[in-house]
Length: 381
Ligand SMILES: Cc1ncc(COP(=O)(O)O)c(C=O)c1O
Image (cartoon, rainbow, N blue to C red; front, side):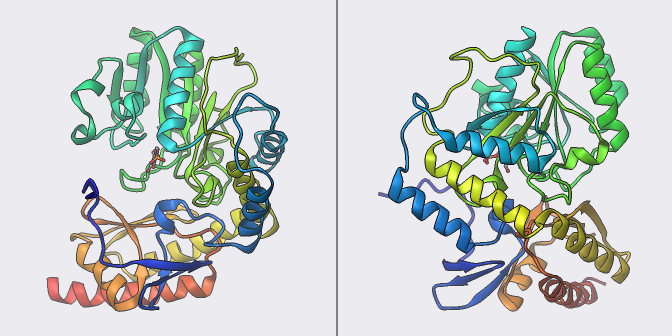
């Protein structure tokens, strides 16, 4: 049987990973500044994480959501405490798109409304409602097209109020930091404005922290820089460090009823063990603080080096926008310096490393980037 060929692939086969490094089948070692697409939060194969999952698997790996599972309560308690959101309620699922799909459904149930607002360059996943609110017509199939999705200019409060005023909107959804759209920050005033406006017009505010959450921005959630309290927060990627886990945090005034949301796999024993291990390590190794410090260091060092590109982002969610396509630069970083990076669009290098990245590893990347950038700039000029 052939695989359904939807991914462009590098000809590299990782077979082992530890911390911020990955080894291929030939034993070549790579520095991982991509974190498997922002997923690796506590570093690859962290011993505490491996032990927790192994032990859990030998006790009980899975049952269903029809029995008592104390691990879900332990996870909720720990997450509430570490995230600074102890009064929210937790619903567990399996992926980012599923988290947003549930958040959208919940907002519609709560308000009795159908319309949603999202923003230009936003990405919220590939399932039905999430993709309708994603600003990329190429991935919206005819069945997903709906007039219930209104996509407005990013950071535009006036446009948002115009729609909120004239239509019955269930919720506004916005990323804590736009990832796939190019590491674009919503201004603090924009987020504060959204909080005020959604309240004023009886809508809910959903912050999509699937990529920017779990310490990546140097705060547990990126929206916390704006000091707001969203109605719903969606999470996934870093939550399970590679184990597929997603979740939504729901304000305490939103009342559940049995059957309102549900999933077979979400919140299973193994997923909880993985997620608890991630939080244990984030706390013990002070990884949110590390993401803040090391991210600031990379951003400052790269900004000092040249004004021929723009460095954006917070913590270890960094975009470097060049004046030329980044394909060759990323290729050279990968095949000449053994460094994985990501990208957003043609001209932006995206860095999403494990939150354990050290200053020395940051220096390794900075030196390689400077060299490759200088070589390519010479050829272009
Ligand atoms: C901001 C954001 N929302 C939602 C998603 C969808 O997550 P998943 O691929 O786990 O469905 C992503 C994935 O990249 C994302 O970056």
